[in-house]
Length: 431
View (cartoon, rainbow, N blue to C red):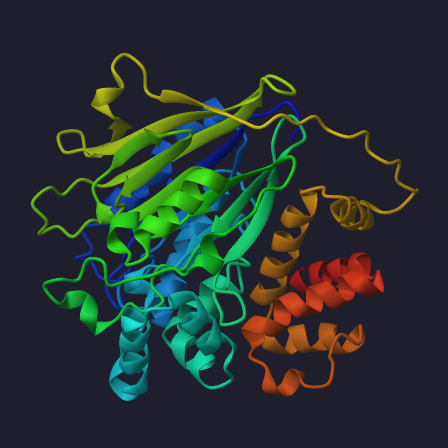
């Protein structure tokens, strides 16, 4: 993608409802979704290529498997219309992606949430629970449907050993835009409905302490804005230090603020509830690139804010954008210049990607997402056949959930140097 802008579609709060969205003849939001795809295609024709889709939570309405399946189908339709690979979708969970039936069935889960809210040492307590073989799975059980349908398919898992995920995208000057997806719904549950529901959620420092890496800039995805978090002050300081772009959802009202040297975008909702006082479907498109070199580098972000027109029944530019349909932000970057790449041996494209990634090349992210998406889409018996054919199963796998295993199989194939053969087998089964 050298020399090109990295363009991404940003969605939030889609709220697919079981038995209604995409199924009922009374689904009034279906025309909104259709209009969004049509509008995004017009943007694609101007800004192509589109690199993928970012979703900042509340994909579902009640955290049910069928809701995520509906979302997956629609996201695949959107990706196809944008000429994107269907695997190039990155998601984080929101409070509506939590299956609250687990809280009713297992009273220990709300008790665990309350313990984390009241502790005076959140980071230690959260680490202890996540690393505990009993409380860790319990804490993440309400995300089971999200992980099984969305997390494993798009390589955006949230799980005890690592509640967040990261993925690398190449920028035009050879540097990396590292996506980091945070889970702000860890303790989301029935307590969210209480009058003082703000500031009852949390992240924990492990999710926000990124560290600085040369040639790497961060874009953060998080469902809940900072003012909804108990540890919001600490999170805000970390994000301002480490991340140049912050994407949030949840509020259903869009706001864009440049804080210090960081762009904070709280998105409107694709599907706001129609009984809301200001029902205004929205989505965004971001074009990102680096200008300048060495100590004069700036991260440029063009924001195309798209909003529903009640009179025309389609998406149009945000009127506050004056005479333009976008706004341009420039964020100062640390000095950096690319190192001369080491020559690669004569190898297949897939193996080149893996070896280049070991030297920091972000192309592996695309390769990995393609492979995992295609693998998860295969029928169960075909997945098993590939695993057995290449000897990717290890002792202890029978006790691990599938959502953990699929990424592990990829890593094992990588270490064995058989990525090419696995890829070919997946493509053959798909065909």
